[in-house]
Image 1 (cartoon, rainbow, N blue to C red):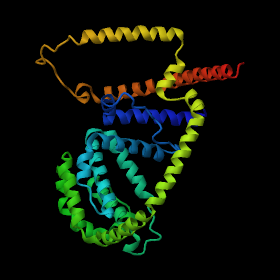
Image 2 (cartoon, one colour):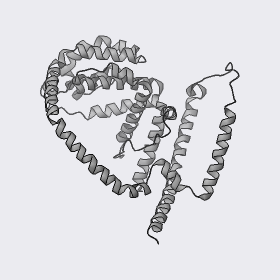
Image 3 (cartoon, rainbow, N blue to C red):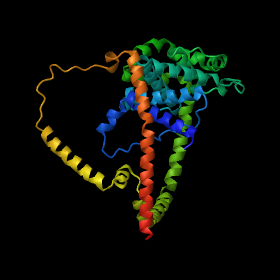
Image 4 (cartoon, helix red, strand yellow):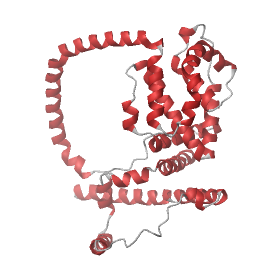
Length: 352
């Protein structure tokens, strides 16, 4: 692995770890099925050649984490606008709500958001913008929200884009800005009000009619093609099953799932040790069933930020980052051991 790729991987691991901590995702995973597969490749770092790119990835990671932490999916869906033109505006407003809540908790996160949005807005061009029809409402809405909620000082290009929709957005949202800021923690009220305002705006009525006409045409064409698609799917399923049967022997021998990987890497001594540990855990579990809480009178629940000062938290953050770096050697060792196991299996299968 090249030095550049190595840095990207370490940075990605650090981002994912931080994201899991901010979102409390490590608690969520413990409540889910035991078959949950850990996957750190849900996003890719294409380039990391400047501070702007570094800040961009950090801001995007923090935003995902805060959405997981503060956004309830059921509440979000229950207020989702029916008009497709309003959906992107509604989604962006919820993203900003969660980011503002996170900014109140974590100063570093707030700085990431501010710097990233400033970088994004500075790249906006207006050469091809001549009239209101050339400006997307979603683009103007994002600039309006960032200006009024994050208090960003927008540049001349952004001011020009916003000017085309300024009157519409001002009439619809200006009198509610303070209401939204006071109800950031109440998602139900916040989402409901945003959805109500978007519904009352007359900007999108024409889009509704166009969408309904398109849906009617789509339904007609779908009904004509249903039978043909069913026949094709039947043939494809049969062909797929035959291919799967032919390749089953190869696929099962090289199963790289997490469970199978652990089995391939274990040797005789390790298996014996694991068996002993398993029996010990079973015995411990049996004894734990008899334990009962006597009293919770003296229990205390405290947040980490109340237990440690800012300097200590920074120190712990650096310590965590150092611990993450050490995983690289472990991964390399496991990869080498897996390679030896696979080579041994290949030679055995070929009779060498």
